Length: 339
Picture 1 (cartoon, rainbow, N blue to C red):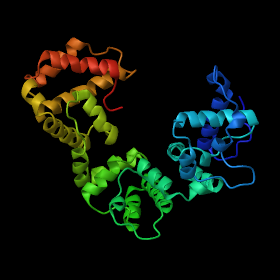
Picture 2 (picture 1 turned 180 degrees about the horizontal axis):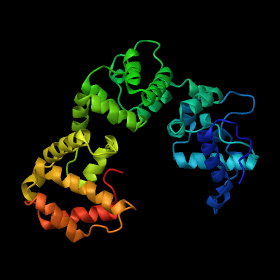
Picture 3 (picture 1 turned 90 degrees about the vertical axis):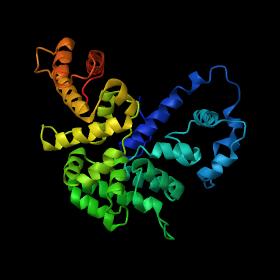
Picture 4 (picture 1 turned 135 degrees about the vertical axis):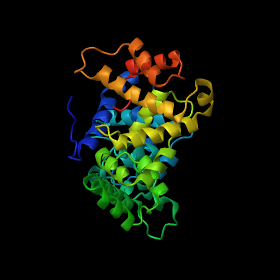
């Protein structure tokens, strides 16, 4: 299948165009049994030739109350097939919440190119605000009184530039955010920023957290491990705070902090099973070693469930055999805890 007349807007926009082309190609199949002429949808389909397109909010308000959002998009696709219009749908003709969702998949370069085509959306501050908060969930600047003339579009570009700078040099990246008032130098604020951001390089992040233990402490407290099974909680922990590649003082620090946090979040489990921070510490190392043993292609003789239970209970005698057996089953079925 070939996409017709797709401008060079980057891979992200190509995916959007491809999905919409697929919807057009299969539109007739979805329309089996439906009545109505696409040419009768003039008011629903957008502006007349020679007139400027309406804004996303104006378009949303013009929709008939009894039509759901999906029906409007469906009718739009039908009308475009009937008129044989090439290319892909103008985002300004879609509901604003759908436009924001589509644009949230693009990087800063593609967004700059997109704003040149969809100029009304490119100047929509609500759209840029949504894009900022969907990528960088927490910034200190979000909680301040913003000055007149503040631009979320400019903030998005600064956040993207700061993230790229951090991924090259963590110290320069944090300094960039602080110099522009995006972050304040407080451990809790920095921890929230790291916890809610997925664009930071994990290797640089690991070096930064190793240097800033106060930020690491606050980052650990942001995790809620209530009612989580121990291996799943450990996976969630290492998803935000990546484990080092080799065993050392930093890994021991991470597991120690995790053990105390896990027990603090599960007081009932501590009473029922007999867990303690020291016992969780031992179990975490056992899970990591078991993960390596079961997933590494270099280990030919895999550890059996009976061997894991025997070895683990030698170090943690208060833990029941059934509980340790469930730990083995979890690693065997789901996989590595620190992958």
